[in-house]
Image 1 (cartoon, rainbow, N blue to C red):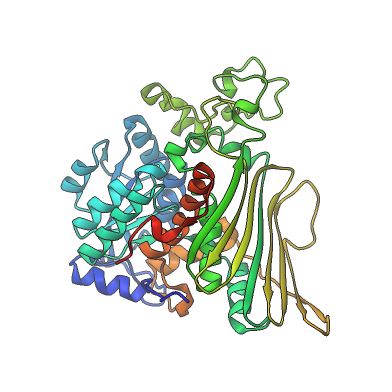
Image 2: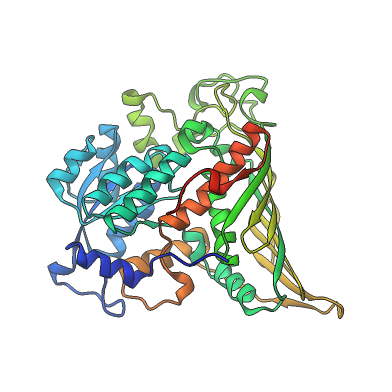
Length: 444
């Protein structure tokens, strides 16, 4: 079994105080008006994710805790558009080092293109800034090593914002697995489905390139691998994988520059009208003359070098094995998950989006060995993004909430174990062999 090396919220606070910076806390969630409680907060990467969950949402939820002091993006127009959408009055930058020097943030959130995360994380950790990053932490093993080394060298804990851990339904799964209801877990069956709306969208954006998101093995599956690591309290040790591109990219029989200017729009099943989304128009369409980045790019672009159909076998240090699959062109969205144990089986079917009505978004059953007794487990629901996980995570970070040990804030090690599973899967396909996690990085 793995040694738990993640940092609790209190560890994060203690480290922050020692570094002379601090973290955002408030007594029992109460709002204090004292300016000393407002910490200097900066954001690098002012795209949709950054300016929503880590921008306008924070400005609205934590005005007593946060002072926005700087926004940075390589596209100056997007930085300005992001500032307007967040509704704050702070300087914008295209140079990250300049932003750090001039604004002296105490807290930094990294929401840039995945393959660039390590650049900002390592620089900020070295300056004693408390750093949070979107998932995946990194996209390459060398980047992972750099972040782990930086966190260790500067004794400055990174937080990887794995919001799916904090969804009520995922907490329930954690509790049941930990309770021993099905005995010792021996294997896991996990299939995740992305529909032809959400799944296709990855192929419109920079995520279609390994050089941007590391493939969906890393960008998307990092959520799923982290959940399994967390649920099992185990570390992955070896991955064997298969992947193919069956629907998008070069598989298309026609292609255009982007959806707004495509002659095939009337007949393309994947056509998407960006003009109907005012927010995305401001962040992307009105800024694309600077960097030629098209948010509504054609899903059939021939430069796409990732997979839309993936499967893997993952072995863990606890002896558990997992059969995993991810498909990005399905008619519905959600997952099927089963834990096989020495005393029984725990089955979960989660419906995130589908073209038919469901009575319950998540259905779960416990079935015992020998007796065959089957019990339905009532699964809780949550409000807001990621099944209620977004708000819970942010409140744990920015409010003084008492939480169970299993909700310790995920550290660089957690981020590494998740993204390395995806990196190993991608490498396994490229090299046609099983990949051991120990080949990729050194943890000590």
